[in-house]
Length: 463
Image 1 (cartoon, rainbow, N blue to C red):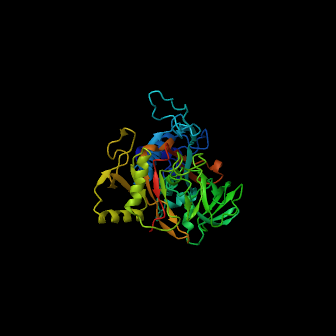
Image 2 (image 1 turned 90 degrees about the vertical axis):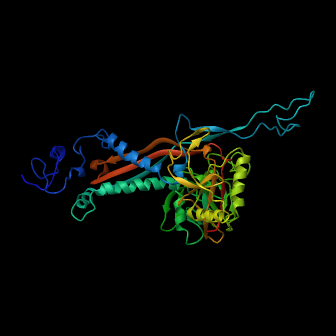
Image 3 (image 1 turned 30 degrees about the horizontal axis):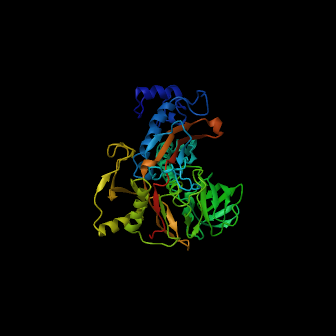
């Protein structure tokens, strides 16, 4: 039986067992088409997902995406990954046992030879709770489009093409959530809110996700949960309590459905968009008064007025972090701010070298490039990481300014992973009630800030 197909013996036997037609032995006149239904399409599975070969899919495709996450030059890569561990939170010490009601002020002080001892006091602690978040990316193709795409002039295996594209989208989604802004000025009101106060800021809705809990500076006690994010109109819709009086106010995140962002972590009560300030209730902490345990070392802003980046601004971040017992380990900024910083340093001949970024915690360190694998320029020995997803500030006229700059002590930042990226595929047409093939990537993790006062940021920078 002559044919132009060059089947191996294994392919021939497999095709003969699951042929969609063509002859007694499953020979077809075109390319192999068994992949349309999968190797066990007629075998009843124990659930809605194909069980046979699931381990292979996860080990191959899931690992591929996870490896890609850790080899991209983005902020997600620069933060160390840890196993979730048997915990849902931890405690932060909020004072050193200072007894403000006692005459001697605190429990640590000099004592003369016969003097009285300091008043006994105890430290104060606050609980910080953290739970894993699910990040999911789905895709699918119809059975007909999958068949037609394999014909002459088609793109080949359409399902495989979509799978590859979705894996890249999954990577991008995680990094965008990590670099999302805490909030922006808004207009409108009630349940539909326009992000920004003009018509040129539609892209700002990308900093919000369905399921996020919002509040606004007009009434911090009133919240709404996002149900719709419409990028075409730059609007978001909330359910539950409506956010009244939001026109011209700062709208901000009180709880993330996805990963907590760096901008959420590096905040205090002086945060705001434009010149509208409001508190940021993140990590179950109700106050971020500048200088306390819940606040950033420094959140430098300019009340919505653009300003040029200077070395003094950056050095102030270094100083505040070190005053709180931290040490700057990483500078993150957008591409525009990176270029300006580069020009500023070159003009003053301080752009000294490049370095391998090392991921570590405490005294533990990886070898240079072990987990990060990229080289970065440095300032005062601290690597500078340009991230295209870094958020921008907004001025009082609703014009986007330059991207923010973050100075971080990554010893106190970690991505706790409950489940690394998994790949799941579904070919159950009865469950879908349609002739479709579907796939999904899922990652379960959350970003943890073990301390807040060892990170800083600079906003309101000119483009």
